[in-house]
Length: 474
Image (cartoon, rainbow, N blue to C red):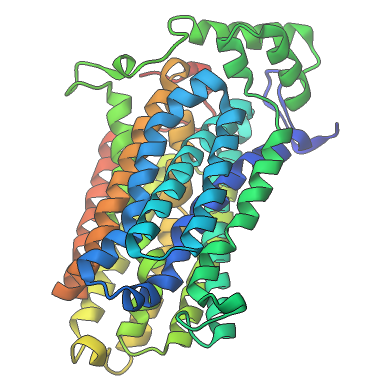
């Protein structure tokens, strides 16, 4: 296997094409994460009208999948430790296929909620396992870039979902209009998710198990084979040293439990609290309001349905491009500096959006932004996505995959990811009600959380660039 230009780290590890490919396969779970959570965007108005839902009901219908995600994330660590990272990814794929089919064929809103919960569980499992797996098979010197593939896959999934929503609505003449076989376009928005879920399930059949999981299970010879193939480690001395390091880091705990996360600081280890707060702040800045409700948002302030879909797709393209920038920077600049820049930029742009919406005239269906204010709001919204996409989007997932000590990594990541999904649910489910109070109030609130995230990063987050996983401390 040829070696990529990102060669050695001085420890006998090399970044081979194989490690990039298997990391990409694992990160496809992130694609489904993005697709499954964003696909509702184009269906919001059609579902609300079709089932005659009020603001609270549509908020729950949109966000209920996130409760399933919290549940899936909570149990993902236990499943991964017992059955392995690869088998757990396969379970996630099955759940996502079932959810896509069920959501597209629902007969009532509670039926939709049920299948969205099932898909949410699959998304939650994938959100934990992909960064864990990628971190555990990656050389330290490029771990940040490979870990960022999770976020790249997420934003590509968001883009694909929004693009397919726009295309299906365009072909049908509206999300609520009938398309193929008499099914409305919004139903096909869910049904198409079966394709990437099937691809994901097929690809993960070919990836090797994590060497750290194999060592934890006493399968040392298998771990040696994986390290040799994945990291191109042909020196027996280097292999022995790496296996010894992994064994030493895992020796204290072969069966991680929640009690292992306990510490003297408010009941949890400091590193666990940092992971939880990273997850919460990533959601409390309101990013998923843009990706779950943007079509409805722009439609509500005077843009046509077609233009609203177009704006949403353009925003997702911006998100993909800046994630590529983040991947190029994360191992050069570091994790903490990117978070600082992102928090400051989001606070400013969210504040500008809040001001723009304070200038809106009219109410309900007649609401509009006067003069150039609408264009300023669009620019501010996309600048906000730029600052998030180059920082808190990818960097949080990189940190969660690498910041915890080996003995608690899967369990701690499950807790942090569960907190992230609950925070996502809180923001997503409350936005319709907040929007009725006023969009200016909603975005002002998110701007305040962005400012708090800046203070948190400066005071509590430590840099992990270039540190071996075996050297992470609690």
